[in-house]
Length: 167
Image (cartoon, rainbow, N blue to C red; front, side, top):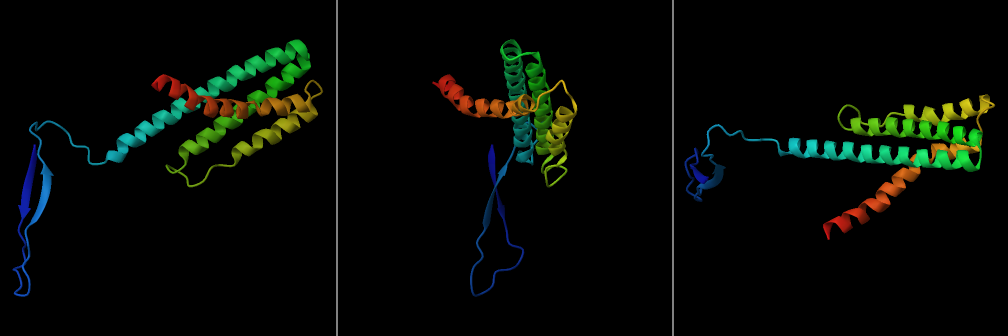
């Protein structure tokens, strides 16, 4: 039910002009037990957080799936050493993506900028691969970039899938 409350001016009208009544619409609830949400941004913020978490999970699952497929194919056709190097690089890429997503998730809530700690991951990967004779540099770096492939696949094919589902 919508009620209209008329406000009367507290200052007496001047002789030069008349002050008109101000009409303010007021929402009146018939159910006295219902709660009124005064901050509509709380619900939308929770929805955005849930949507962001679902997007992160889809990207991580896709990255793990692409990693498993790429490691399997490279181990079969290029050798076990290449497969292990690719797996090491892909694991560090997924760690990098997780640290980046965590920093972006905190953006605006607790900090005003994204942390730079995720930049240590490729540096540590390079040092690990260069010090270990069992790993090769090029497959490890390509494995690190697998997370980029999962992002590309997610954002290219997600609109196509949504269009097909909405028809």
